[in-house]
Length: 377
Image (cartoon, rainbow, N blue to C red; front, side, top):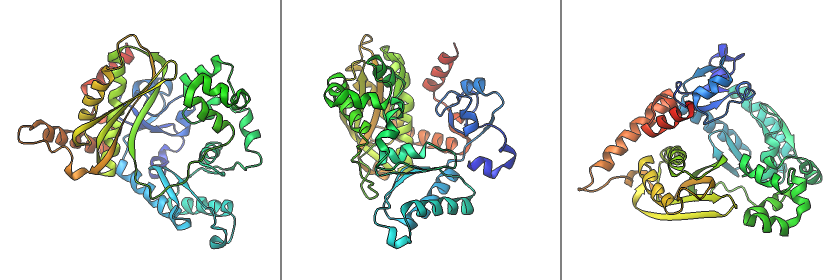
């Protein structure tokens, strides 16, 4: 939206934000998504799906500033704003009717109009009584929609929806549910809590709660961020250790980038795996010092991975995260005997600046390039 606003010649075209042919898609417009293009897709695959797309290098600083600008407008309505990313946030408008002289729906329509007037950017808004349904509503009518899911119609609304509507259910999870005859959210509800827990453990119990429109999470604007993590669910189960490492590396890069953006560094590293029986394996390690370096995150995560990956056991999900945060100023200093860590920090900082300016694909590591070449074979 920002790139099309700033360059009107792009308006009628599918637009992909990212690097060169060997890079990956950072994001794309809805026209490109209609062709199957998705974030994090290798650029050569995206261009095969949508060869007529216009590719532009992203300007992360510009995107962050616009995100902050919109967030300030949200905070004019309520201090209860919880950012999820630079372009997404939850708001709690409970008890604001008297302050704003109208229902939350009216306040949100005015907010949507204000954002358009002041930024010429469209936003999609979902209104409901919990986070899960508000997020679901916001996805119903993009790019400039306003949808409401009320308490009275919540269960009937969810009844025929695909299980893929539920947060945390990717392609592999949907396939696993379908093998047990669970294709819709209504099927999960009909299965009942005991059967869902028996089949899938805590994950199954969580899905049943969501099928009942139950999500107890609160909007928490002031809560300290407890962790920064990234995970992915595979389209096909993976056992090969080298393949798991290739998937793990870009996740470590994402965690490092988010730490840099928030000017934090983590002392505790967590590796998460989910096997084909939906058993979740979590490994933690306290690092020698706080870090925000992708290379250090990957090095420790790989060691933890080797404790469980034997080349035979298949996994359907892998994730990595950092917690126990400190200020970035004290991170990755090394000591008198460690001269490599400060050098690596300088290199990764330079790479981050290049990617912010020219797009993620502007600079790729050897491991990332290897995975792209393997994809083409």
